[in-house]
Image (cartoon, rainbow, N blue to C red; front, side):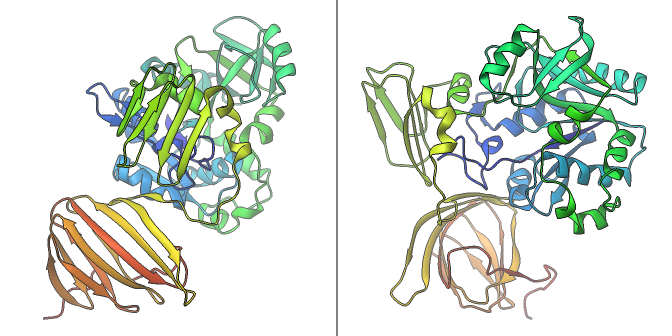
Length: 444
């Protein structure tokens, strides 16, 4: 049995805390048993560890999320990089080609999102799923929970019986609220987003697509796969479906409304609240936030913006957002994270961008150069060894280094490091990075 975790999301529904590079699964809003801040993805991976499945887990994601995953999970799990964001069906097909070259085709594959909010018993059910898949290798197996209310956010599973395991009479992905109400009256279950089957079942789906089936070739022809969800492309069209009822706690923390219900405290960050009820303040900045006389509100403050909204309106937040030409102001990196403090276009047409970088101890920034960007580093805290144009330099608090365009540079931290980086460039994206071999050493 192998677990395939799907890590995607555009970061719109929990704006401004989430963005395209910091989707909801990476938000450190929850707490572990010891009271430490924890993301949804970290929580799921911890649960997989507790049931002994972490070493059989593979994550599929786009390149923009790899740094965030490696930052939070380290390098202890395999990551499949999708060439572009094309929904769950192409992602699963690419992962199928990857796994087919590495494991037995008769292995059970359990596919699920990277961020459900569930109890440990959810993962303990996977052993039963594995057994059911091997008993019915030509079928697709789902997990379902009793709906709490009609919604168009989830798929609906209509079982033939009320048994714990039942043949599925019908599956409908994200119906209207009116149709969802009718389905619930028929005994429908919410789809938990779990799909279990044998790997050869998935290979058959891939072979029906008239695309290359080897990983390298499919990766190069990824756009040939239909951009659609696995639910539409496979589940709705599969004749042999089973549903396994899950009677434990299951929740999709996909909106501010649902997320705040599971937050251990109403305040996160530098915030105070007086004479208020059913209100949460989430502050990712250092400036203080004070709320007085608030009722049923979410107040979220981050480098990307400020949200003040009724909790009842937050499920529709994505519809209210407009496209922003500015890049995300917060970004996870495999070595730490970066926050944009200031950016502006100058009179000469170039751009100035100031970032605060937090780099963990014993990490290395990739060896690279910029063709059109001048950089200045100012160290605030910690120590590091920099390699700039082949020359080694020891850096510590108050050190200032100027790096002209075209000059190769890298940095290895000796302890946790905080520095300010000022870039003067032709734009304010991160596209002007050209990697070099990390084996280059300092000049004698």
